[in-house]
Amino acid sequence: MNLRKKKRILPILPILLVLITAVHILSWNFRAFTDWYRLKLFPIGTGLMARLSGLFHSSVGELLIAVGVCLALLELVIVPFLLLNRKKLPRLRFWNRKLLCWIFVYIYGTETLNCYMLYHATPVEEQYFDVQADYGVEELMAAYTYVVTKANELSGQVKRDADGAAVYEGTDEQLYAACRKAMQRQGQTYPYLAGYYPDPKPIRASHFMSQQYLLGIYFPFTMEANYNTVMYPVNVPATVCHEFSHLKGVILEDEANFFGFAACVESGDVYLQYSGYLSVLGYLSRQVRASVPEELRSTLPAVNEQVQKDDVFLTEEKWEQVEKKAVLSTETVNQATNVFLETNLTMNGVEDGIRSYSRVVRLVICYYAKKA
Image (cartoon, rainbow, N blue to C red; front, side):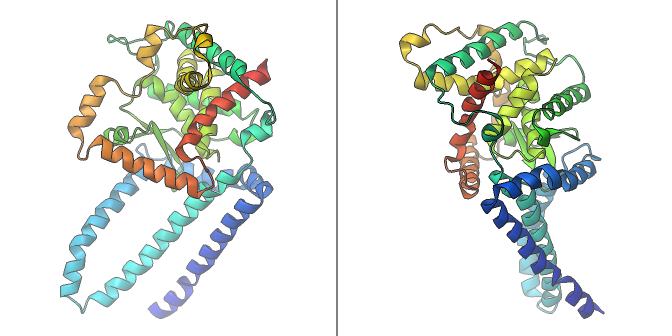
């Protein structure tokens, strides 16, 4: 009986591996196929996965990672025991090997179908903007001026707590609903953004996440949009919309940054709008310093004091909490994260790696140029 089951089950694994790999190869070589997949097939399976994981308030992906780490540590204890009890070793090895194979196929499949393939979809600039436009200093200054002006204006309109921090007036559920509505509105212009969005998930290990300088994270194997609960609150809406875009097959980080910005600034919610403008302000500011001559920079509007205080990842108080709870140094954790991100991006065809995040500047310029 067991042998017959083994013969029926195990051949499925190589077949699945071949199919997943074949689809991955297709995505690298046929952009039209990847675009069709993202628009037509991707929402079906991922929508189901997102609904299932959405039944749980906590992040299922974070839980699975924690379980995986615990099992790996447990293995360090079990292996010596198995070596001392060789009679039990063959049978235990078989079940462990089979389980590991299925886990590998699941991770490989979800990472490929829900992430890696989508790096090869047609970029948003090619689909919706003028990719041939030769934007320069003038257009950069115009976009920067508009963003700074709006941020300065909105900084005085958002609600603040006793410490002066910008906070949302409603509940977390109302904020999530506002973000979902903002993204669904983007679906009217960008069809692949239409449809169902689950609630975003707060990450319990947000202190460790802060050491990685991560505002949010997308788990392809559970289809969840997760966000850092320790970061400065006004970052939340743009981050949630950024991660929501990943749920719709937007994997390039500059494009996710752009959709996080666009969804927020086009919403009717002042808090979301402020979050959207702040989310791109740093990228624009760095590009202005690098590209605009000093004599021209002096003509640009200044960021007011309140915006400067709000345009932060973590407050000093939160950083102190993070460092107190740290097991490893923040520098070590951040370096490891950067190496992982750089490797992941370059392996998937993003030649400039982490630097690609800043390409959102070009998209913001395109956005305002199209509206002009």
